[in-house]
Amino acid sequence: KEHKETHSKPQNQQVTELQQLDRKQAKHAFLASIHEDCSAALDLNPDLGKAYRVRGIAQRKLGKYKEAKSDLAQARFEK
Image (cartoon, rainbow, N blue to C red; front, side, top):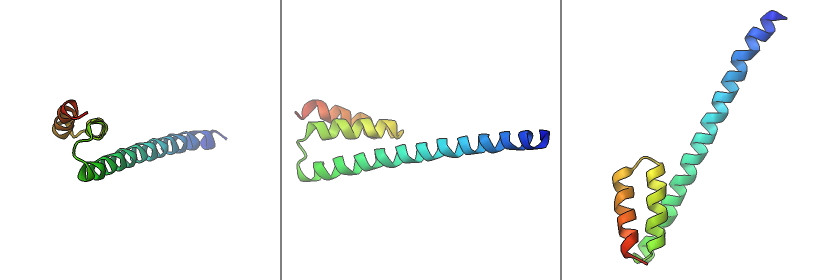
């Protein structure tokens, strides 16, 4: 019985780590999708301030800080 408990704890930790990884990958995919949608909208109409703002926020969360700063600055000028 002790062997089972000792063995199951690392498995539980492993499952938890995999679940966290899945959530992280899902979040990244979601943010990438937002980025693509906003880019497509801006290709159609480059005057969409909200698309710059939303894309800038997504980029910031993806760690693309220079791009985020540029989009968020552009969002201020477009309404």
